[in-house]
Length: 348
Image 1 (cartoon, rainbow, N blue to C red):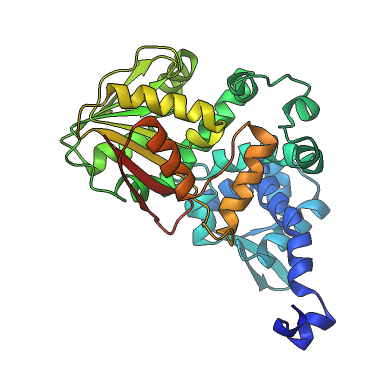
Image 2 (image 1 turned 90 degrees about the vertical axis):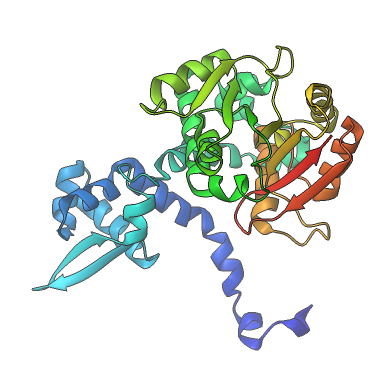
């Protein structure tokens, strides 16, 4: 292995040190979002001193100055020196993705990562050792059922729904256009949460009727916080494991199958197969692993996250094909988007 490394890499482990400190970089961004740094810089319309930022956000001057400098170092904030004073301003990336006011904001995703995922990952070694999620150890709540873990309180539910909404703001269009879904005139997004992905379907295929099917309390929260005045989608309450599922030409399962063990996934897929007419199908949207186990690294990281948080995992295309085949779907295809999430289509 050493023969593949340069002498500088052998003398000093730059890449390892970068990885070791990755959690610190994450927390810099998380903390800046939580404190409102990016919103203030966006609203100010002019560069601000550390003193001004600390006063507006009610923080210590020393702490804020260090945080702003770290944000400059990772190229999320800009700085210029004027008359010996450092003045800070947002970059375009920060304005677009980190400020809450932006239509492409990832703020909700970041808060969920900071408040839920980050603490869970503190028990990663125990998750690997025990082979089970770490909700109870991390938060003091039992998680015998995934629903109880993720939606154990309204606050936690809002954070999770914010995460899902942010995810499809940046990945939604790519996954719903990975295949041509225009032949499917009725679409049901199972576990569609806020409706963000369903709206992307509606935008891409305006002639299709799109329905979000999710648990009653999720639908209630979605209508309360995410319903749009000119909404082109509809919501229906139910549990896709036990309730009657509405008829559709295609069913979308986006970040659903990875939550469960294979037996339960096949159980759900068999239900959908029985509802499909010939030519109907399911669109599975997940982060797909490579068959050769060499990546993508983000999907591998996501799979560890499923270990620490759920009873599921990320899978390779062949594993999804096997489950679809076991459920009765014969025509299966995969499309990689080059983004975080990919698509698999199974047709009856």
